[in-house]
Image (cartoon, one colour):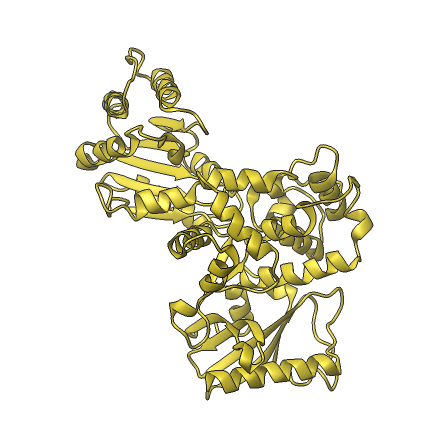
Length: 469
């Protein structure tokens, strides 16, 4: 298995516990949650069952009963309620003898159909039976991250504070994707791995689709643009798996997909018009929880001034190249390598990759051990409206103002770019009234050409730095 050392260690520690444990594993679709749990326990479950997408209560209960029968409760009666279902599960577990019993309920949100009574029965199973024992390890899992967070982790009823360990499964880093590419013998150099990461992010399943013997360009053609391209409709599938009613979430993401810059909640409300403020707040929180958006505290302001940015690499790629696609060129990517549209995407996508690797950037700057907050910053329109996507505000009274530039060679500042950067820094200092020292910092693919225009850059972070563990 690539990566996941901390998660593996934690699951094994909970298995060895002398108390019953309740572990919630969650994360976006295709990130590798089920694979992780199966690998750690090698399929040795006292009971394992997965919810069925879009199935009604009756069908879910029939499926649950068949799983109980296959896994040892041969004489299980027909189940009419979830209370009966969890009572039958208790009978099965009682029959398993001594030792820790792992119960793995995958895609848990899909059990919770309208008016099914699933959640109260699940609460009763844990509170009145499982938690009173010392031999149960209950692992729940699901792609509908917003459901797990709202209904389980932030539950104010019977499940309040019942989860003993949360395990959010994050996408792979660049370093982990490089290790996976080596494992698959793809033969990619770091720039090709970066290109894949800018489109797939660190979603393990997407990386598993890459074929040995093909370049990154050829893989893009077959996965996104070919006649039977597997990922052409993936965006819609992801949203429908995460949210039971994704219409509002689609509308919000559409707003972000049409803009290059971040937005405040108030700007999102204005853009949607008919959607209420409360609805927007809930949807923004859910999209943030699921990893589509990132919330930055605006420098020098409270949460009210937070800026939301579209951070999901796959979504950004979808909006640039798959949504409203014209034509059926099966080799679109091969034919678009150096076109302005793809170059613009690379620039935006590289910024997102940098935001996903802040810890690696701090390590490269030598400040990993220094307390630091990362912000976005935008000047008011009346002050010029300048924007800086990454400001690292350090505890040693220094601030890194980061420029993120994608290029196929060492980056060279022009006189115009130098003037714009210095103007943004001056606006930043003037608007924020900061007295800290400011370090202009370049994050780029290969390096900086040291000329008169680039002399003001204090620190340079390269692609190799982003690949650090």
